[in-house]
Image (tube, rainbow, N blue to C red; front, side, top):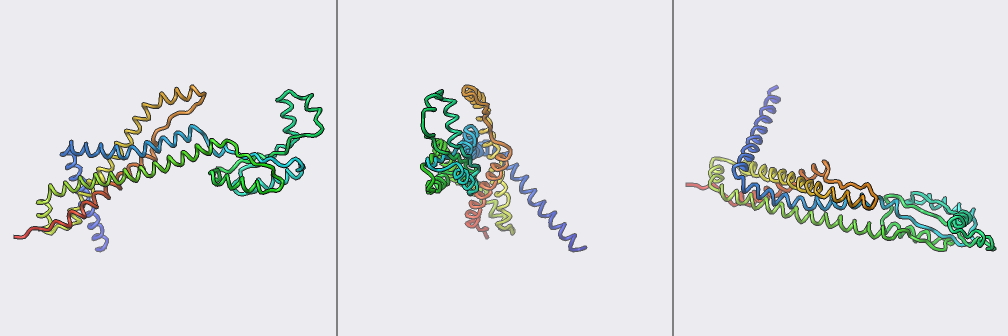
Length: 316
């Protein structure tokens, strides 16, 4: 029973200390309104840019549709390959890993379709044989539609002795997919660089705060205050900086999306599309807030650890 009461008392003390540090830190930031706002705006812009790029890439991907449905391979079999053999090859292709579906267009079906669409029925009747080959239409699985995977599938099919040629349909889709992958990497690199910038901004702000409060910190250490005690409100300050900056960054992107949405709707309508520009969702908001808080905390910890190690209590 005694141990339980001691644990409860210890927890209450811990909560009280951290609550006091959080409240005092928030009040301190509020008293330095202009400096806090300027710091938050800089950090918010840094967090908004990678979020905006990510939203852009996602909307472009949504506007162009699912690439895996657009990409396909047409496998032209040699003229001497029978329809029965073509059906066997279709079954083999459909069972391969990375293939979503394999469909056979027989030579007779292709000729009948060509006869209907071309209007050359009489001329085609004079042909001694059907000149069209059996064709396999293959659709890759969604997780196997990258350029390297499609090229590997194309090489595999070309190695069949019954295959005359393999055509990869809609090469532009693959190029566009590669462009989007490049943009995603740009977003990642930009996020890393701007994240380092946020850490630097918070670190410099906390460093200046420590320098301004040097005398206070020396007195605190003189009466027994530890580095952890002194560092606690500084870490809360960095975390609050990151939290508010995340809100600002998300708000900026949301405002940009709202201002661009009408123009995007008009452009989509001109192309007969129902596409609607989507802004940052709640999942991205949560990720941005957590990222901002983590970066703010890290920047504050680095600055506090470096500066507090240099401050020693003065003795008479």
